Amino acid sequence: MVFDVGKIVFEIVTDTPTYVSQILKEFGAFRSDKVPTIVIELRGDGLPDIDLRPEEKVFESEAIWSYYRRKNEHIFALRTGGPQHPIFAIAVFDAPLGRGIIYSETSNRHLNYTPLSYPLSELLMILWLVQEQGMLVHACGIIDNGRGYLFSGNSTHGKTTMARIWEDEGVILNDDRIILRQQGSQIWMYSTPWHGDYQKVVAQSMLLDTIFFLSHAASNRLTRLNTLTSTHMLMTRCFPPLWDAAGMEAVLGVCGEVAQNTPCYELGFVPDEAVIDFIRCAQ
Image (cartoon, rainbow, N blue to C red; front, side, top):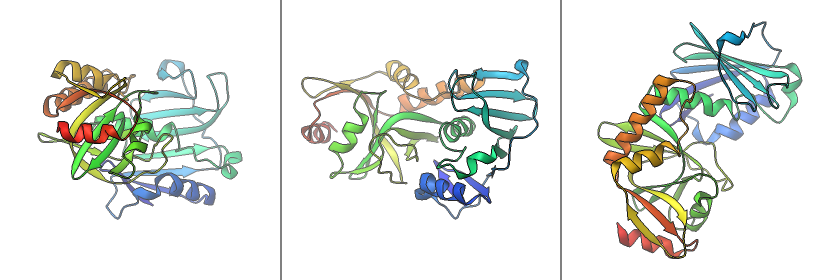
């Protein structure tokens, strides 16, 4: 099974039927006939005999995953809870992140879940995008009459609300996570499988026209932002590799390029359909 998410083309190989159904449920809209550059094997026959050394731990999420770095390997250990909980899956990838194996406990074979689901798939995407002048952002992406709008915000800022408002007026790529990639002087936005409360996902892409940083307000208002402010706001609304200094620098560079090449506004809005005409008239 081959999938294309944000021009990251990967193949998932598994002989576990429950994994197949769950993978298609999560990534089915992104199936592709392209040649993959990444191959992921999912195994459900137990964990490998790997010594996870404390000195090799790069990042601890204090929640459900830990990241280890060795000379030629990236290793993710997944748990059902905090660090005190047992590991139920381990992902081992080569240094270029082009090939990996995800091992899972046999008992997980019959669960309505695959270890490639959250958070691992998003963590891998963050690392892949760092290599490709791209980043994952907390945003709702909408195509309106050939124009690509990105409505960015953190939780409760109104991304899902905006998706529902535009549902009959535009194409909603995703209400929560969008990929941005730089191609020359152009910035493109891509849908992802990882949605919020608005569960409809459209696997399309669009040249990015405008970015709106969301906030709730008593009336609809737009404030044009300068490049520095826009860069800062993007950095606080993206998913950077916090464990990697070089990766952080790369994401900061992408934020700067996006802010420099894309009109950015702070959008205070009232949650009703009037905001659609307000935005269209302002363009």
